[in-house]
Image (tube, rainbow, N blue to C red; front, side):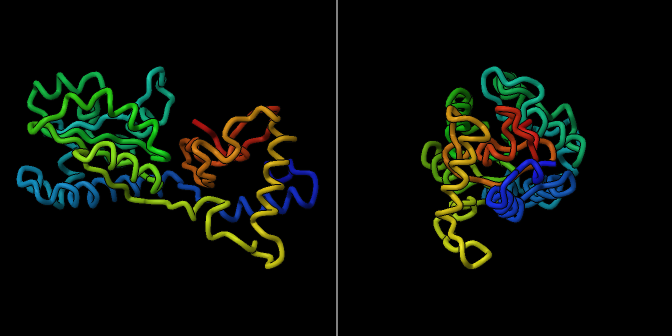
Length: 262
């Protein structure tokens, strides 16, 4: 239905390019990313920490128990409800890979967890884009961390722009992701010149996209290339990052969506 909502041949050509570029992570693929994050990313980040090295090779087993000094914390912005990606990702960690529900806490509970002897906080999210939102979030809880409490951030997928910003802002924070993206992964990335047909260019395709956004979604649309202008064509079965092209998820002006925003 989404593809057939485009009327002209030019619009359908653009839609076909978008579909061909789309990276969509199913529930099974999301599960694989979660396992990769827990089994590979965290051990690599903490390999020089003797306390956590004892969990090497058995992080999934460890996180299935309720008595370990580790907590998973969703990355939540002020006003985020239960349907937002942070909460959803935590539920998926429990449902798909068996993380014990007692290990999942809200950001406001970090202080109490620290007082109870928790040693590691793992911030979980599905997508790190520009890093702006996470930086605002972490700045609010940063004061809870010292030598007794280690912060780790494991988004399922991270853009190089956000990783650069977060690492620069918070050098004490351990950061890794099972999947990473670069500027070149955007639909109109730096190395994109000639389209697959060998005739049209991505520059002309970009002009067509902008015009389509005006007519299809309205002149007042914010961030026509997604949040931060990253131009991503990426989504999960449970949600779509706001750095993804709005053409895929925006409901403005009755636009038919291919992906669900949340």
